Length: 235
Ligand code: 13P
Image: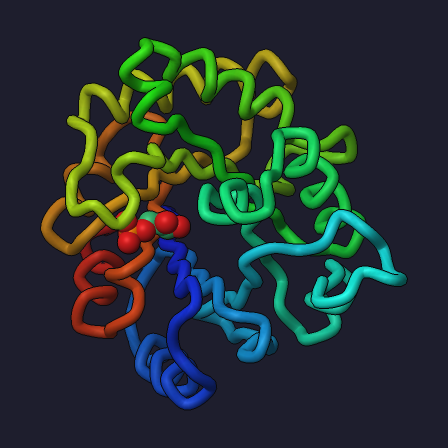
């Protein structure tokens, strides 16, 4: 079973999510489909589609104007949240420690965090990919994490929204390091997703790479015609 997660970023509206859930609910798939949507659209999903947020606060409650707590997200019926997405790491200056605190709150409130990690173009060019990714896993996974209770997403930051992907060899090498790191931490049953410029055309090849348990999809998750081929290509 693969995990196909969509990240709608700051796109869509309630009606477009209604339509997407409705259309996806009719498909026959073995995969686990997740849609991470803006806060205003959060709700409970169904047997086919799990609904998730795109971030949660590291605080429990209180004077944090504009923030949304993990408890509030869970209260909508949503069951998943992204944490540490590169766009949030950039905008909010989140470190791995901040990401771990957000993931910790997610787990405390019965949300499955999808913990995103990945190297920038500069880090890649400096040969730091493996170090950044390994540190990302070790430092962003919180101390209350349980095996299978969270998901890792590897998103090379230079490939997000860029229409380019690393080679399958590069993806395989990074996912192998992530798997070994997770094993070393005692997490032998934790899924690892690949994300960045995934489309219907490359999804099958990417998901055939060892240690790729699914994909995290941005742009191509917004339209059914783009998203369905990715789900179909998981089989
Ligand atoms: P794209 O699929 O648009 O490259 O976005 C990837 C991403 O950021 C998913 O979280």
